[in-house]
Image (cartoon, rainbow, N blue to C red; front, side):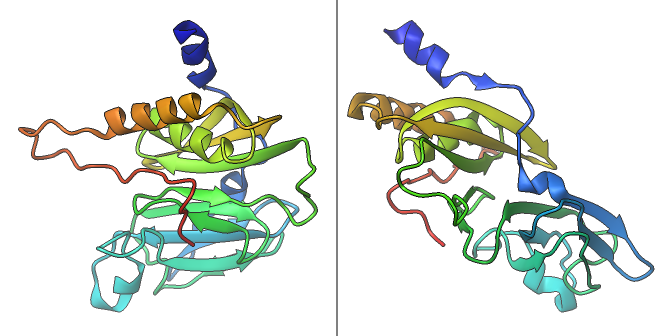
Amino acid sequence: MRYVLLVLLCCARIAVAGDAASCVQLGTTATAQSLKNVCGESIIVFWCHNSSKPVNKGGLCGDNKRYYRLTTMLKPGQVDSNPYSSPLGAHIAYGACFGDYGSYKYTDDKGGYLCKPPKSATKSASTMISTSSGPTEEEACLKAKLLASDSGTPGECACKKHGKISVCKVESSGPKPAVSVINNLKGMLRELAKCDPHDKSCKHSVMSNPGGIRG
């Protein structure tokens, strides 16, 4: 039983199909960095950067507030370029979902997010896709599985690296897993986030909570 559970939770290192973050192409102009939608569908992009200049401070990642501080919707081929929200030389961390401003929710304060199903999807759909992110692929995968468990039995993780974070997607289908399986997932996520009390460089990760996702 334990072997089967471990196989179920394994993180597959395969490309994320339909990952909206892959639609974002970073570039530069004479005055700013740019974000371009290179896909054929509209996407909502949320990002932040590490510039500490006062004029750009609204874009800092986290800083005792939500991780992503800037948001825009990009139509196919559209470019966003602004020296205040995307300054030259700054590291930009970003995520994206297909759709508009109501198509995503943040799952934690460390860059995790969930892409909602498209409006065309119904509750009777056989499969749903959950997306989450984290500082490691293992943590992002566990978060995505927890989110997927809210609508059905989670499948394997499909993960990609985006800068310093990993983004994982999980398809769920059929009935919700047993409470014991969900609790096991939560326990593994807690163990993964534990810090050695003597390691001052270690920061506790915020746990994903499928029942209380913040928007």
